[in-house]
Image (cartoon, rainbow, N blue to C red; front, side, top):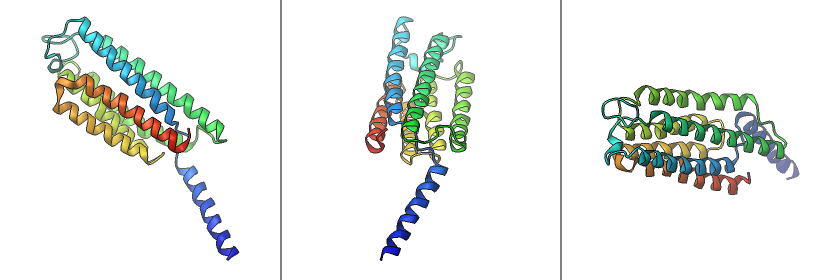
Length: 211
């Protein structure tokens, strides 16, 4: 009986070691909360920019960049989105590093590099798509594209970390598709995807994994 229990314990240890070597387990749930707060702040800032330029009621059907019918908000909005992205990413790095140090794990490992590569490839593709089409597609499509490509990036990176990350990505993609279907609510849906969903996910992850 004791030998059977010892064998079970050995199997658990082996499984734990295999999981730690193949998955990034230091991702902080609090980073999701921070990203969500920044996402809501970004949505509010975008609405203020649109209001400041006295955009027409159907602004969401016009391109963000200048040109005939364009809103000419390209630079302010993209600068604001860039600030939100940098702050959110920095928060994730700092909080995850702190969690790794607290648990005695390394934050920068081969798994971390593979996860970042899986995240950045679709994310960079989406960024280029948005930059190249901002002058030709409606603003609502630009907003939806940011949600969809971000969601695909999270799904891609999800296989290297907690399983819940996969479903966060799926929710972001669905939110982006809803944004395409309801373009007049683009700002609200964008705030829901990058803000509310992130905060809810972050709190769930923090409570479940204590970090």
